Length: 206
Image (tube, rainbow, N blue to C red; front, top):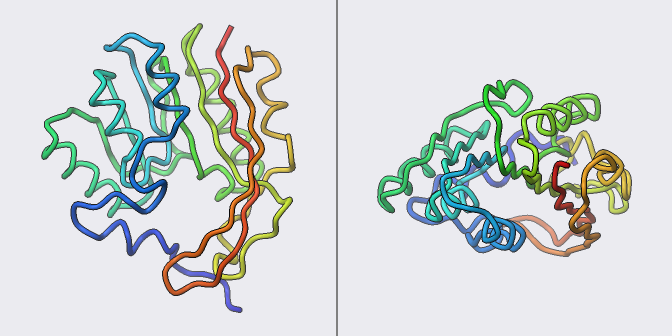
């Protein structure tokens, strides 16, 4: 199979009014749980936000929310939905490798995207995330590991798959609230069924 040239999610991001590409459009469980422990008015950042399921939730709960993604379609949809839902989000197109962390954040979410960049690149992004997190703030990170190989219909996209447990080692100097290993099987439109393996972490900066 030839190398994938366009991620499957670009087409679904273009569907108006729908944010069901990942997780049925619902915010992630960890985002709901951790943000519920925090006070409104704090600064939240969603790196690689896609079409905005987590960012929209955080903004609706009163967080000063920044959201970036490399996808023009994803950001356009997020801005449209933010307007329709009357929430304020500073959402703009940006590669996570190039984002300038110009303030401290109390919550940083980075889910499902670090494995899409090379190892040396995500190592730098993780470092920047940690440095930009306020003391007592949280990082919520989810990645895919190489326990399951890159699916054939996504060949060439996952250039930075993590080793099992590798993500956790980057937060040994923080308070680790929760770690989770997962595997899932699913199917994208017009693609074959495939499996993913991954790790999630919720960590708090000491």
